Amino acid sequence: GFVTQSAAGRRLLAMAQRVALTRMPILISGETGTGKELMARYIHSFAGDAQAPFVAVNCAAIPEAMLESILFGHERGAFTGAVTAQPGKFELANGGTLLLDEIGDMPPALQVKLLRVLQEQEVEPLGSNQVKPLNVRVIAATHIDLEAKVAAGQFRADLMYRLDVLPLHIPPLRERRDDVLPLARNFLRRHAPHEDAGQLLTEAACQALQRHEWPGNVR
Image (cartoon, rainbow, N blue to C red):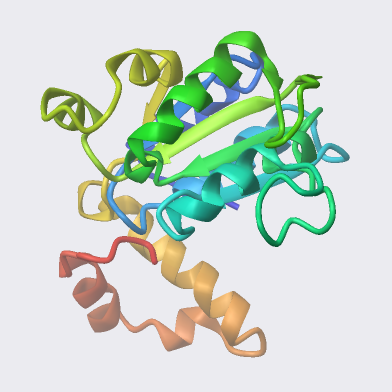
């Protein structure tokens, strides 16, 4: 899971445990590679949702023309090529957690529909006139400054406030250097399970790891 021994990391996990006890929207911010999806999975797990679905969607990786259908689902014949009905990610995550990763890259047209889904706690698939009730913990994640995007007119302020109910910020790795060696040992145990991490990491190696700025963060 989320490996940390630093004071900042322990505070972050304590806060994550508190917000996990509610189903209100959570916004996780942090630089690329800090572990935002791992934090979302930690919240899902801590909430006791081990048997409930965890569904993640990267809003930046899916073409705009497909994202609406993937999120909200569609009925047969809703558009050219829709030969069968397909549930959306919201429906698939019902009863569990939906992670909207890179929410800052969501197209403006979809922001309006997402806001309505969050407000009404129901979803209407494309081509359908039937709404489906939802019971989903929504976690949004972003490496972008949403307030700056709102100021630039590229993100809806009302959607930002709807998502940013319980904010969690993951500091970059260079600001929690006490986590560097625990992470290194964790990766060594994972990828070299038959080796002694204490022998592989010499004192010089440990010093070099802790001096590095880690521009890619944990990733």
